[in-house]
Length: 47
Image (cartoon, rainbow, N blue to C red; front, top):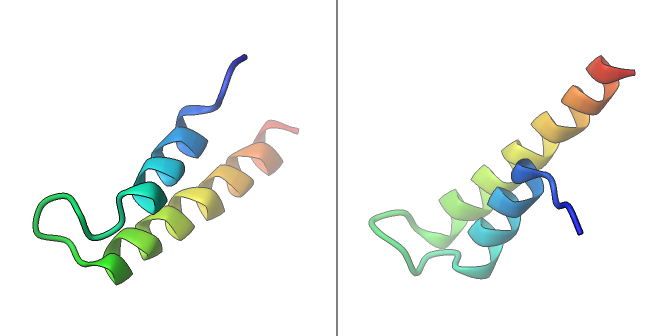
């Protein structure tokens, strides 16, 4: 099963939100949202 690296990155951010390094939960969640928004943009660009 292939999973897009953007999806993997967002999933990791959500699963460990606030538990890695100096970033807080809100920052990790926002980064996951930003990654998924970019993923949506890239899909539109590809079509």
